Figure (cartoon, rainbow, N blue to C red):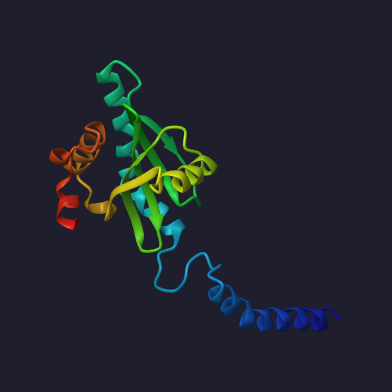
Length: 176
């Protein structure tokens, strides 16, 4: 009797696989499709290359040298697609640098945000002004194993400068 019910459940599982995957793919509900990078593998690659540890060390060094809490950091855990965010407030803007996982790999994104813009306030601001409260300045696909100390210095220098053009990382200039 157990074999009969086992056969029915495995037959049901096989039948469900024939319609579930295509439906989820059609509705764009699959966490990763063929040819796309698995977020868990991307998290592993970031850890294996030591990039996360190197990124973690810099805000403390910057804040210590500045003598104040200048760069704020926020870290996320797998399976989140946002890995970490570093922010700096200058004048009336928040400058941000974020490491995010996209379907094609890890991206470094630089953006500005007007303070106090929650999603509701952001929507209202966009409606009234016609301009977004969050402005993506630049983004670039990363190869974690190839990120050098010089790259990290350029990234944080660009953030600290408030995205002055003269501090834009070389790799980002080439892609602009």
